[in-house]
Image (cartoon, rainbow over all chains, first blue to last red; front, top):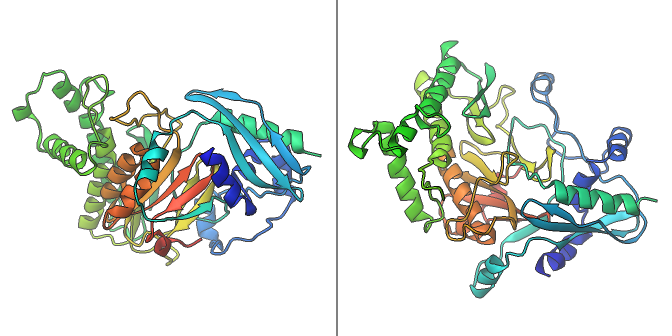
Length: 158
Length: 247
Protein backbone atom coordinates (compact mmCIF):
# COMPACT_ATOMS: atom_id res chain seq x y z
CA UNK A 1 0.00 0.00 0.00
CA UNK A 2 1.34 3.30 -1.00
CA UNK A 3 0.14 5.28 1.97
CA UNK A 4 1.49 2.66 4.29
CA UNK A 5 4.95 2.74 2.77
CA UNK A 6 5.15 6.50 2.77
CA UNK A 7 4.12 6.84 6.36
CA UNK A 8 6.80 4.36 7.33
CA UNK A 9 9.50 6.22 5.40
CA UNK A 10 8.78 9.37 7.32
CA UNK A 11 8.17 7.49 10.48
CA UNK A 12 11.49 8.29 12.08
CA UNK A 13 10.25 11.63 13.26
CA UNK A 14 7.41 11.86 15.71
CA UNK A 15 4.19 11.15 13.92
CA UNK A 16 1.92 13.94 14.88
CA UNK A 17 -1.24 12.21 13.88
CA UNK A 18 -0.76 10.05 16.92
CA UNK A 19 -0.14 13.05 19.07
CA UNK A 20 -3.43 14.35 17.81
CA UNK A 21 -5.13 11.09 18.60
CA UNK A 22 -3.61 11.09 22.04
CA UNK A 23 -5.00 14.55 22.44
CA UNK A 24 -8.50 13.15 22.29
CA UNK A 25 -8.13 10.81 25.23
CA UNK A 26 -8.62 11.85 28.83
CA UNK A 27 -5.17 10.51 29.79
CA UNK A 28 -3.63 12.74 27.19
CA UNK A 29 -5.47 15.75 28.52
CA UNK A 30 -3.98 14.99 31.91
CA UNK A 31 -0.52 14.35 30.49
CA UNK A 32 -0.67 17.48 28.45
CA UNK A 33 -1.16 19.52 31.55
CA UNK A 34 1.43 17.64 33.54
CA UNK A 35 4.25 17.28 31.04
CA UNK A 36 6.30 20.08 29.59
CA UNK A 37 6.85 20.31 25.85
CA UNK A 38 9.65 18.10 24.69
CA UNK A 39 10.72 20.40 21.94
CA UNK A 40 10.14 24.08 22.45
CA UNK A 41 8.83 25.83 19.40
CA UNK A 42 10.57 28.96 18.28
CA UNK A 43 8.80 32.21 17.59
CA UNK A 44 6.16 31.73 20.23
CA UNK A 45 6.70 34.55 22.65
CA UNK A 46 3.51 36.53 22.76
CA UNK A 47 3.01 39.94 24.22
CA UNK A 48 0.59 40.08 27.10
CA UNK A 49 -1.96 41.99 25.06
CA UNK A 50 -1.70 39.55 22.25
CA UNK A 51 -2.02 36.52 24.46
CA UNK A 52 -5.15 37.87 26.06
CA UNK A 53 -6.74 38.49 22.70
CA UNK A 54 -5.96 35.30 20.86
CA UNK A 55 -6.98 31.98 22.27
CA UNK A 56 -3.78 30.02 22.78
CA UNK A 57 -3.24 27.09 20.49
CA UNK A 58 -2.94 24.10 22.75
CA UNK A 59 0.24 22.15 22.81
CA UNK A 60 -0.24 18.55 21.87
CA UNK A 61 2.97 16.81 22.82
CA UNK A 62 3.72 13.18 22.21
CA UNK A 63 4.57 12.44 25.82
CA UNK A 64 2.83 9.12 26.34
CA UNK A 65 5.06 6.00 26.44
CA UNK A 66 3.88 2.79 24.83
CA UNK A 67 4.91 -0.83 24.49
CA UNK A 68 7.12 -1.47 21.45
CA UNK A 69 5.55 -3.15 18.45
CA UNK A 70 2.59 -2.55 16.28
CA UNK A 71 -0.82 -1.82 17.68
CA UNK A 72 -3.81 -1.98 15.42
CA UNK A 73 -7.06 -0.22 16.10
CA UNK A 74 -10.45 -1.56 15.10
CA UNK A 75 -11.93 -0.73 11.72
CA UNK A 76 -14.47 2.06 11.89
CA UNK A 77 -16.92 3.04 9.26
CA UNK A 78 -16.31 6.63 8.25
CA UNK A 79 -18.98 8.29 6.19
CA UNK A 80 -16.88 7.72 3.08
CA UNK A 81 -15.69 4.18 3.78
CA UNK A 82 -13.93 1.96 6.30
CA UNK A 83 -10.90 3.36 8.09
CA UNK A 84 -8.42 1.46 10.22
CA UNK A 85 -5.27 2.81 11.81
CA UNK A 86 -2.14 1.22 13.21
CA UNK A 87 0.50 2.74 15.46
CA UNK A 88 4.12 1.59 15.26
CA UNK A 89 5.91 1.95 18.57
CA UNK A 90 9.67 1.92 18.98
CA UNK A 91 11.50 2.85 22.13
CA UNK A 92 8.19 3.63 23.79
CA UNK A 93 7.35 6.24 21.19
CA UNK A 94 5.03 6.31 18.27
CA UNK A 95 7.28 6.38 15.22
CA UNK A 96 4.74 5.79 12.48
CA UNK A 97 1.07 5.78 11.78
CA UNK A 98 -0.19 3.39 9.18
CA UNK A 99 -3.54 3.72 7.58
CA UNK A 100 -4.36 0.03 7.09
CA UNK A 101 -7.70 0.52 5.50
CA UNK A 102 -9.03 3.55 3.83
CA UNK A 103 -11.52 4.10 1.03
CA UNK A 104 -9.98 3.01 -2.26
CA UNK A 105 -9.51 5.79 -4.75
CA UNK A 106 -6.25 4.94 -6.36
CA UNK A 107 -6.88 6.66 -9.66
CA UNK A 108 -5.14 9.85 -8.52
CA UNK A 109 -2.06 7.97 -7.37
CA UNK A 110 -1.83 6.15 -10.67
CA UNK A 111 -2.15 9.27 -12.75
CA UNK A 112 0.56 10.96 -10.70
CA UNK A 113 2.95 8.09 -11.32
CA UNK A 114 2.34 8.25 -15.03
CA UNK A 115 3.78 11.72 -15.32
CA UNK A 116 7.16 13.14 -14.64
CA UNK A 117 6.34 15.54 -11.84
CA UNK A 118 8.73 17.61 -9.81
CA UNK A 119 9.80 16.02 -6.56
CA UNK A 120 8.25 18.18 -3.87
CA UNK A 121 9.43 18.31 -0.31
CA UNK A 122 7.47 16.18 2.12
CA UNK A 123 7.30 16.02 5.89
CA UNK A 124 5.27 14.36 8.57
CA UNK A 125 3.07 17.01 10.08
CA UNK A 126 3.79 17.95 13.67
CA UNK A 127 1.45 19.69 16.02
CA UNK A 128 3.12 22.82 17.28
CA UNK A 129 2.44 25.40 19.86
CA UNK A 130 2.81 28.92 18.65
CA UNK A 131 0.81 32.07 19.11
CA UNK A 132 -0.64 33.22 15.86
CA UNK A 133 -2.94 36.03 14.84
CA UNK A 134 -5.28 33.84 12.84
CA UNK A 135 -5.61 30.22 11.79
CA UNK A 136 -6.27 28.99 8.28
CA UNK A 137 -7.81 25.60 8.04
CA UNK A 138 -10.53 23.12 7.68
CA UNK A 139 -11.23 20.35 10.10
CA UNK A 140 -11.47 16.74 9.11
CA UNK A 141 -14.30 15.19 11.02
CA UNK A 142 -12.96 11.74 10.61
CA UNK A 143 -14.18 10.47 13.93
CA UNK A 144 -13.66 6.97 12.59
CA UNK A 145 -9.95 7.54 12.09
CA UNK A 146 -9.53 9.16 15.47
CA UNK A 147 -11.44 6.40 17.23
CA UNK A 148 -9.39 3.68 15.56
CA UNK A 149 -6.13 5.48 16.35
CA UNK A 150 -7.12 6.19 19.95
CA UNK A 151 -7.98 2.55 20.47
CA UNK A 152 -4.66 1.43 18.93
CA UNK A 153 -2.80 3.70 21.34
CA UNK A 154 -4.91 2.62 24.30
CA UNK A 155 -3.97 -1.01 23.56
CA UNK A 156 -0.30 -0.05 23.37
CA UNK A 157 -0.35 1.79 26.69
CA UNK A 158 1.59 -0.05 29.31
CA UNK B 1 -10.06 47.48 16.79
CA UNK B 2 -11.02 43.82 16.59
CA UNK B 3 -14.44 42.29 16.18
CA UNK B 4 -15.87 38.87 15.34
CA UNK B 5 -19.34 38.21 14.02
CA UNK B 6 -20.99 35.24 12.40
CA UNK B 7 -21.96 36.15 8.85
CA UNK B 8 -22.44 33.91 5.80
CA UNK B 9 -22.58 30.96 8.18
CA UNK B 10 -19.02 31.40 9.46
CA UNK B 11 -17.16 33.44 12.03
CA UNK B 12 -15.57 36.51 10.48
CA UNK B 13 -12.94 38.45 12.40
CA UNK B 14 -11.83 41.90 11.36
CA UNK B 15 -8.92 43.52 13.14
CA UNK B 16 -7.74 46.95 12.11
CA UNK B 17 -4.65 48.13 13.95
CA UNK B 18 -4.72 51.71 12.65
CA UNK B 19 -8.46 52.13 12.44
CA UNK B 20 -9.22 55.56 11.01
CA UNK B 21 -12.75 55.69 12.41
CA UNK B 22 -15.08 53.53 14.43
CA UNK B 23 -17.42 53.02 11.52
CA UNK B 24 -14.96 51.16 9.32
CA UNK B 25 -15.28 47.77 11.00
CA UNK B 26 -19.07 48.07 11.10
CA UNK B 27 -19.03 48.97 7.42
CA UNK B 28 -17.03 45.86 6.60
CA UNK B 29 -19.55 43.64 8.40
CA UNK B 30 -22.44 45.45 6.70
CA UNK B 31 -20.75 44.62 3.40
CA UNK B 32 -20.48 40.91 4.28
CA UNK B 33 -24.14 40.89 5.30
CA UNK B 34 -25.17 42.48 2.01
CA UNK B 35 -23.14 39.86 0.13
CA UNK B 36 -24.88 37.10 2.06
CA UNK B 37 -28.32 38.53 1.21
CA UNK B 38 -27.41 38.61 -2.46
CA UNK B 39 -25.51 35.34 -2.88
CA UNK B 40 -26.79 32.85 -0.32
CA UNK B 41 -28.37 29.77 -1.85
CA UNK B 42 -30.01 29.23 1.54
CA UNK B 43 -32.08 32.40 1.20
CA UNK B 44 -35.03 32.01 -1.15
CA UNK B 45 -35.11 35.79 -1.60
CA UNK B 46 -31.44 36.10 -2.64
CA UNK B 47 -30.55 37.28 -6.10
CA UNK B 48 -28.71 34.04 -6.86
CA UNK B 49 -31.86 32.02 -6.04
CA UNK B 50 -34.01 34.33 -8.16
CA UNK B 51 -31.54 33.67 -10.97
CA UNK B 52 -31.54 29.92 -10.28
CA UNK B 53 -35.34 29.82 -10.27
CA UNK B 54 -35.44 31.73 -13.56
CA UNK B 55 -37.17 34.68 -11.95
CA UNK B 56 -34.25 36.79 -13.15
CA UNK B 57 -32.85 36.68 -16.65
CA UNK B 58 -29.13 36.94 -17.34
CA UNK B 59 -29.69 40.48 -18.64
CA UNK B 60 -31.41 41.55 -15.41
CA UNK B 61 -28.78 40.52 -12.86
CA UNK B 62 -26.70 42.95 -10.82
CA UNK B 63 -23.17 43.93 -11.76
CA UNK B 64 -21.94 41.99 -8.70
CA UNK B 65 -23.56 38.76 -9.77
CA UNK B 66 -22.34 39.28 -13.31
CA UNK B 67 -18.79 39.73 -11.99
CA UNK B 68 -19.01 36.61 -9.84
CA UNK B 69 -20.37 34.50 -12.69
CA UNK B 70 -17.64 35.76 -15.03
CA UNK B 71 -15.04 34.96 -12.39
CA UNK B 72 -16.53 31.48 -11.97
CA UNK B 73 -16.32 30.90 -15.70
CA UNK B 74 -12.72 32.10 -15.88
CA UNK B 75 -11.69 29.96 -12.92
CA UNK B 76 -13.40 26.87 -14.33
CA UNK B 77 -11.33 27.26 -17.52
CA UNK B 78 -8.06 27.91 -15.69
CA UNK B 79 -8.51 24.87 -13.49
CA UNK B 80 -9.43 22.48 -16.32
CA UNK B 81 -12.99 22.20 -15.10
CA UNK B 82 -12.13 21.39 -11.51
CA UNK B 83 -13.69 24.56 -10.21
CA UNK B 84 -17.35 24.40 -11.05
CA UNK B 85 -20.14 26.43 -9.48
CA UNK B 86 -22.78 24.12 -10.96
CA UNK B 87 -23.87 21.66 -8.33
CA UNK B 88 -24.90 18.10 -9.14
CA UNK B 89 -28.52 19.13 -8.53
CA UNK B 90 -28.27 21.76 -11.26
CA UNK B 91 -28.22 24.82 -9.02
CA UNK B 92 -25.57 27.46 -9.51
CA UNK B 93 -23.88 27.85 -6.15
CA UNK B 94 -21.16 30.50 -6.32
CA UNK B 95 -20.31 30.33 -2.62
CA UNK B 96 -16.89 28.87 -3.49
CA UNK B 97 -16.11 32.12 -5.29
CA UNK B 98 -18.05 34.57 -3.19
CA UNK B 99 -16.17 33.95 0.04
CA UNK B 100 -12.72 34.89 -1.25
CA UNK B 101 -14.16 37.59 -3.49
CA UNK B 102 -16.02 39.18 -0.57
CA UNK B 103 -12.91 39.15 1.64
CA UNK B 104 -10.86 40.69 -1.16
CA UNK B 105 -13.51 43.42 -1.62
CA UNK B 106 -13.73 44.00 2.11
CA UNK B 107 -9.95 44.48 2.21
CA UNK B 108 -10.32 47.09 -0.53
CA UNK B 109 -12.91 48.88 1.60
CA UNK B 110 -10.40 49.01 4.45
CA UNK B 111 -7.64 50.16 2.07
CA UNK B 112 -9.93 52.93 0.83
CA UNK B 113 -10.65 54.01 4.41
CA UNK B 114 -6.90 54.61 4.82
CA UNK B 115 -5.90 51.77 7.14
CA UNK B 116 -2.61 50.04 6.39
CA UNK B 117 -2.43 47.39 9.10
CA UNK B 118 -5.24 44.90 9.34
CA UNK B 119 -6.32 41.29 9.06
CA UNK B 120 -9.59 39.78 7.91
CA UNK B 121 -10.23 36.14 8.75
CA UNK B 122 -13.42 34.73 7.27
CA UNK B 123 -13.81 31.10 8.20
CA UNK B 124 -10.09 30.43 7.88
CA UNK B 125 -9.52 32.38 4.66
CA UNK B 126 -7.26 35.26 5.53
CA UNK B 127 -6.14 38.56 4.07
CA UNK B 128 -3.67 40.60 6.04
CA UNK B 129 -1.74 43.78 5.38
CA UNK B 130 1.02 45.64 7.16
CA UNK B 131 1.91 44.65 10.71
CA UNK B 132 0.11 43.39 13.78
CA UNK B 133 -0.51 45.57 16.84
CA UNK B 134 2.77 44.45 18.40
CA UNK B 135 4.69 45.66 15.34
CA UNK B 136 5.55 42.20 14.06
CA UNK B 137 4.49 40.64 10.79
CA UNK B 138 1.10 38.92 10.89
CA UNK B 139 1.53 35.28 11.79
CA UNK B 140 -0.94 32.79 10.39
CA UNK B 141 -1.21 29.20 11.55
CA UNK B 142 -2.24 26.28 9.38
CA UNK B 143 -4.68 24.16 11.30
CA UNK B 144 -3.87 20.55 12.13
CA UNK B 145 -6.33 18.60 10.00
CA UNK B 146 -7.00 16.00 12.69
CA UNK B 147 -7.00 18.27 15.71
CA UNK B 148 -8.63 21.65 15.46
CA UNK B 149 -6.90 22.76 18.65
CA UNK B 150 -3.46 22.50 17.11
CA UNK B 151 -1.57 23.99 14.21
CA UNK B 152 1.10 22.38 12.07
CA UNK B 153 2.75 25.38 10.46
CA UNK B 154 3.15 29.10 10.99
CA UNK B 155 3.58 31.43 8.01
CA UNK B 156 4.16 35.11 7.43
CA UNK B 157 1.91 35.88 4.46
CA UNK B 158 3.49 39.34 4.02
CA UNK B 159 0.43 40.84 2.36
CA UNK B 160 -0.51 37.71 0.46
CA UNK B 161 -3.83 35.91 0.93
CA UNK B 162 -4.04 32.52 2.65
CA UNK B 163 -6.84 30.00 2.19
CA UNK B 164 -7.29 26.37 3.11
CA UNK B 165 -9.63 23.89 1.57
CA UNK B 166 -10.38 20.64 3.26
CA UNK B 167 -12.93 18.23 4.50
CA UNK B 168 -14.93 20.45 6.76
CA UNK B 169 -16.94 19.95 9.85
CA UNK B 170 -19.84 21.30 7.85
CA UNK B 171 -19.78 18.33 5.52
CA UNK B 172 -17.89 17.32 2.49
CA UNK B 173 -18.95 20.21 0.32
CA UNK B 174 -16.22 19.86 -2.25
CA UNK B 175 -16.50 17.23 -4.90
CA UNK B 176 -14.60 16.41 -8.03
CA UNK B 177 -16.77 17.43 -10.98
CA UNK B 178 -15.03 14.82 -13.10
CA UNK B 179 -15.63 12.04 -10.59
CA UNK B 180 -18.79 13.04 -8.72
CA UNK B 181 -19.17 9.46 -7.53
CA UNK B 182 -15.88 9.55 -5.65
CA UNK B 183 -15.40 11.48 -2.46
CA UNK B 184 -12.11 13.27 -1.98
CA UNK B 185 -10.18 11.70 0.82
CA UNK B 186 -6.50 11.31 -0.06
CA UNK B 187 -5.73 14.92 0.67
CA UNK B 188 -7.49 16.20 3.76
CA UNK B 189 -6.28 19.79 3.72
CA UNK B 190 -4.70 22.04 1.12
CA UNK B 191 -3.49 25.55 1.92
CA UNK B 192 -2.67 28.07 -0.78
CA UNK B 193 -0.80 31.35 -0.43
CA UNK B 194 -1.70 33.63 -3.33
CA UNK B 195 -1.32 37.21 -4.44
CA UNK B 196 -4.57 37.96 -2.63
CA UNK B 197 -7.15 35.98 -0.70
CA UNK B 198 -9.38 35.60 -3.73
CA UNK B 199 -6.67 33.85 -5.74
CA UNK B 200 -5.71 31.76 -2.71
CA UNK B 201 -9.30 30.69 -2.10
CA UNK B 202 -10.14 29.87 -5.71
CA UNK B 203 -7.05 27.76 -6.23
CA UNK B 204 -7.21 26.08 -2.84
CA UNK B 205 -10.72 24.93 -3.69
CA UNK B 206 -9.83 23.76 -7.19
CA UNK B 207 -6.56 22.09 -6.19
CA UNK B 208 -8.23 20.29 -3.32
CA UNK B 209 -10.79 18.89 -5.74
CA UNK B 210 -7.90 17.42 -7.76
CA UNK B 211 -6.91 15.16 -4.88
CA UNK B 212 -3.26 14.09 -4.84
CA UNK B 213 -2.51 16.01 -8.01
CA UNK B 214 -3.66 19.32 -6.58
CA UNK B 215 -0.35 20.33 -5.05
CA UNK B 216 1.41 19.74 -8.39
CA UNK B 217 -1.14 21.98 -10.04
CA UNK B 218 -0.34 24.70 -7.49
CA UNK B 219 3.38 24.12 -8.13
CA UNK B 220 2.86 24.85 -11.81
CA UNK B 221 0.91 28.07 -11.20
CA UNK B 222 3.02 31.20 -10.99
CA UNK B 223 2.46 33.30 -7.87
CA UNK B 224 0.91 30.46 -5.91
CA UNK B 225 2.45 28.36 -3.18
CA UNK B 226 0.80 25.49 -1.38
CA UNK B 227 0.93 23.01 1.48
CA UNK B 228 -1.13 19.84 1.15
CA UNK B 229 -1.71 17.38 3.98
CA UNK B 230 -2.56 13.78 3.22
CA UNK B 231 -4.72 11.45 5.21
CA UNK B 232 -1.52 9.67 6.32
CA UNK B 233 -0.30 12.85 8.02
CA UNK B 234 2.36 13.54 5.41
CA UNK B 235 2.47 17.06 4.00
CA UNK B 236 3.75 18.05 0.57
CA UNK B 237 4.82 21.61 -0.11
CA UNK B 238 5.55 23.57 -3.27
CA UNK B 239 9.12 24.69 -3.88
CA UNK B 240 8.51 28.33 -2.92
CA UNK B 241 6.40 27.66 0.15
CA UNK B 242 9.36 27.58 2.51
CA UNK B 243 10.01 31.31 2.09
CA UNK B 244 6.75 32.05 3.96
CA UNK B 245 7.36 29.56 6.76
CA UNK B 246 8.13 30.87 10.25
CA UNK B 247 8.02 27.53 12.04
